Image (cartoon, rainbow, N blue to C red; front, side):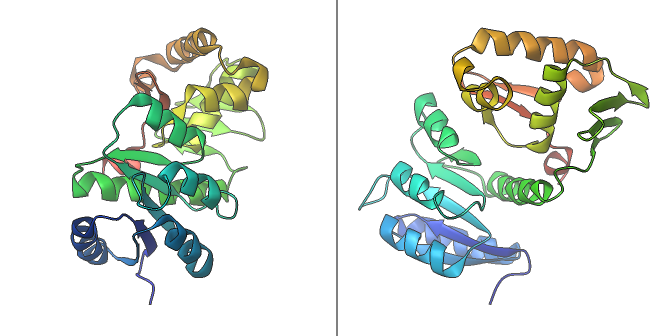
Length: 233
């Protein structure tokens, strides 16, 4: 039977992780499915259609990155990486391959639950992609290509609007520099990191002091727009 908030597939070969997470997730309203191997995770994800997946990278039968790539061939549910690998290159590779978030071990339960809630909210937002995004006094209208701040129209360029909309639709989620550059400028500009920094700086200036702080730099990785809901949960 599914939990009130959905089902989470936990993929990890450490028994203590399952002993810790299963009751914690159940107490928070989630049902759990347990997998300890990559092949088992792929089979259960296809057969049981979980609402979210927690995926360890160090599995006994295949690397977690391979599992991630195979999962993304047939499911778009949120996938959060749980790993002791803390190198930036590992995080960037996972996010570029389709992970929604990356949590380092050891992690706090409160942080992990907040990341799960944020990932699930992000998926719901995708179903309402053409609706205006409202964050406090900031409104981003994707149809009219208009951004207002406290009812005053912001003079954003087409690229600035696209960048803000991309971050807003994924708020709470880290987007790598490559993901942003590809989405806004195309595959020919995936290495133009300095170019991206300029646009982020311009956008922050136009948003003003209060809202500029919403755009958070993840050093060496990319950017995310602060999620009020996650931070106030």
